Image (cartoon, rainbow, N blue to C red; front, top):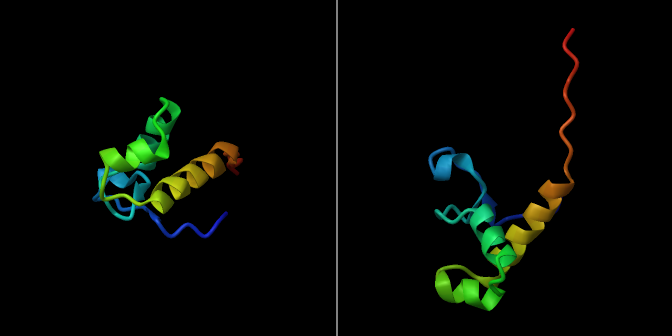
Length: 76
């Protein structure tokens, strides 16, 4: 996995969902906005406290998670 420094996990913030730098902006929110057709510049205008690198790292994290597989463990 990439060294992602802007994605944080805290059970007290947004129920532990991956967020941008501890803020209440989830990776899912960013990915959803981009998927719905918003440009990076439009997202930055809507969320002025975010930085371009925040959005790019959120997309990187989402792409990595999309490729991840969960394998059930066999119980003894």
